[in-house]
Amino acid sequence: MAPNIFSLLVTIVAFSSTSTATSPSSSSSSSSSSCGCSATSRNAETEGGEFQSSCSFEADGREALPHLEGEESESSSSLIAEHEVVSIKGGTFWMGSNKPIYDGDAESPMRKRTVSHFSIDSAEVSNRKFLQFVQATGYKTDSERFNWSFVFEPLVPPHINKQITKSVAGAEWWLPVEGAYWARPFGGSKGIEEILDHPVVHVSWNDAVAYCKWKGMRLPTEAEWEYAARGGKEKRLFPWGNLIMPRGEHRMNAWQGNLAKGSYFCGVSRTSGKPQICKNTAEDGFEFTAPVKSMGVQNKYGLYHIVGNVWEWVSDYWSTVHNPEPEVDPKGPESHASNERVKKGGSFLCNEKFCNRYRVAARSHNTADSGASNLGFRCAKSDN
Image (cartoon, rainbow, N blue to C red; front, top):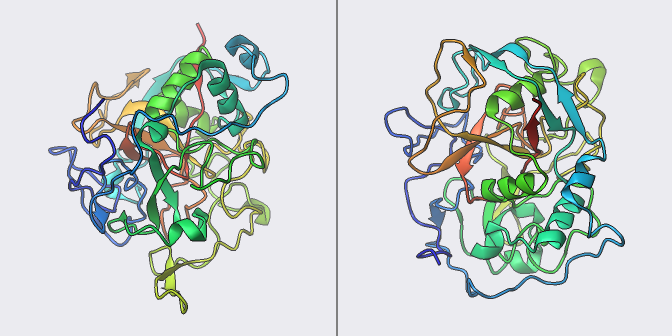
């Protein structure tokens, strides 16, 4: 057992998703970028003191999982045979952006990258698929082992929220909720029975790697992910082009509503006296996560929710230094001092005024053992 396995180790982890080349673990904050994208790391600084789970690390607290009649014995090869993977012809493209929104995210410089032929899941891994994996292998996620995960405050049941005295410093809408994990994504007793086709969340990079390996696949590299997301278009903001709503149509699950103050808080509750979360007006049809194959494909490769919905882990270690020269099949740096990995695509919490990270060039990071309400993944494999 790792020491202090339940603790939120108090380190200098800021509210913004920024970093420096000379000190990978250092961070800075600004009103424009401080949406908490990288704040949901296990080592995040908390308001109200260090978080401690009251349950034993060794205890098996997993409750009965939903039963999928006739599906629990499916093999990894049969899952791949469901034609949910799209093959993408390799090629050369311009990765990143010379007009970054957040300098600390290291979207720039725009750089030429070549990727070989590969295949990638057409959609994010769903609760249903992850359940099949757990039923077949007995796998236990990092959030289960730690016995807590970060939950976006509006998703926390009120009776549980009243008992929570800690939150992420500078991103207080993220609460460390005891007992929250992929099959109990809100904390408490409510499970995933009604959202089996939504993306699995509260999965760490480690968990994503384990699932993809079981499926005979792997996580995509950051270059593969961005190449796939761009869908053959060069130097565009989104998989479909530059307009966020072409012809007035919502193309992704993101946040609609007032976030003008650079925060998810809009005033104070009259009853509790606590900061009140802004209202997502859900004009796209979804307040939080959406089914993995909803809203139509986002580009010509046939990919669903490659931006928006939930962040997606990729294989690369986090870095803010990029080689400006052309590279072939880049895999990123060999290590990171804090074991942070890259995530791409933004989530349902992204908005043009706050957390404008649902663009194909955008990127953020978390430690490899982290989980949250808006963090999932999809798998890829090389096509030889």
